[in-house]
Length: 356
Image (cartoon, rainbow, N blue to C red; front, side, top):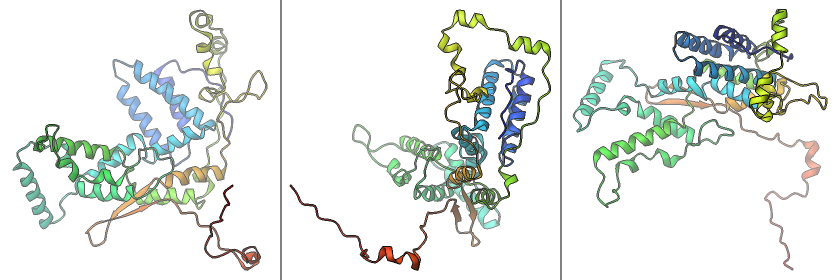
C-alpha cells in the first residue's frame, strides 16, 4: 500500500467529482463498480440542483472517508465493504425490495390464486396499504432463518424470534380494557413488520456469494483483493504551491485553535491523508493498520458470515437459504499427542473446594 500524496482541497464540484473517482479506483476490484456507479449517479442527480451546498459537504466527507479507509482505517474499510455487499446503505435497500417483492404469476393456477388474494384484500373494510404489496411468506421464512443465527459485529440490530410472532399485534386490549379495533391492529402490524425489515440482512446473488466465499477462504487469486498501486500525480503549478502554502491567519483569529488544528491531531490525520513521520513533532495517526493477505481474509470472512443466498427449491414449495461463515472445529488429537491425555477423564469433574 503506497502513501497517497497530500492533495489540495477540491475547489469546484467537477474537481471534487474527479477526486472521488480517483479514490474509488484504488478500492479492491470487487467493491469498485458499486462505488463508481454511486458517485456518477449522485453527481448526475445534483449537477443541476439549486441547493448544492449540502451535497458538496457530503461529497467532501465521502472523499475523506475513502482516503482514511485506503490508508489503513480498518473500521471504515469494513463499512465500505458492508455497503458494497449490501449489508448497509443503498444496495441493502435494493436487495430488501427484491426480497419483499411478490413473485409474478408463472402459470394459470398461480394467476387465479393471485386474483383471489387480491379480491379478498379489496373486500376487507380498509384501504390497501404498502404491506399488501409485500411477499410476507418469503420475508417470514428468511427472518426466521436469520433469527436462528448469532452474528459477530453485525451492522444491523439483532432479530429475535419473539419479534416474529405477528399474532400478538392483532389481538389484545386497549388501555381501557376493550378489544382493539381492526384499524389499530393493522397499524400495529405494519409497525411490527417495519421493525423486522430494519433488522434484515438481505440475500445476494449466488455468484456474488461464491466470490465472497472464495475471497474469504483464500481461494481467489491475489489480484482479486489487492489494492491497486497509486498512480503518480501531475506536477503542481507555481500558483497552486503559493496558494497551498499561505497561512490562513483569519481562521486562527476568528476560531479556537483546537478547532482550527483539529485535522492535525492523531485521531483525524487519516481523514486528511497524513501518515506522519513518527517524530515527536509529526506523530503517526491513531487506528492505522497495514493491510495484509491474512487481514483481508479475516475482514472478508466476517462479511461473508453476515451474507446469505436464497434460491427457490426445485419442487417450488419453499426456499433454500445458505449463510456464509465456517464454524471453528479444533483438529483431532493424533497418536503422538496421546501421552498428554492419558490421565484426563472422559467427562469433566468438578473440583471440590473446602470452605474455610
